[in-house]
Length: 81
Image (tube, rainbow, N blue to C red; front, side, top):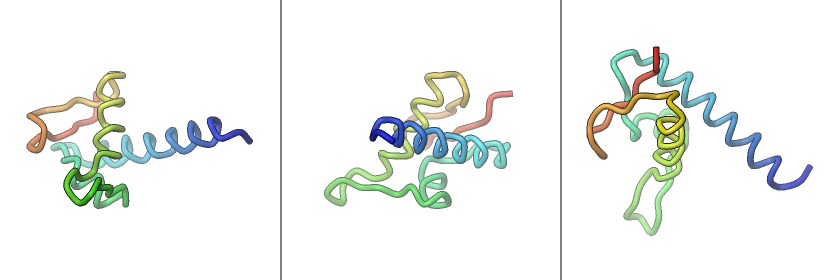
């Protein structure tokens, strides 16, 4: 299997897990909680944290699958009805 196919399969699985986790939290959930609970923590030189999950959430919001309430660090993500 070529590398791109593997990456796309992995991304799909992560997105499905994030969507399921958000659906289990009807009052919304933060990026930090999603990263911690799903084991998606990441950092760059110890300064920029959880960009992996933040990027995935951005894709889900842009595709209309998730609603973002609030700004950057205070944002909560909710399942779309």
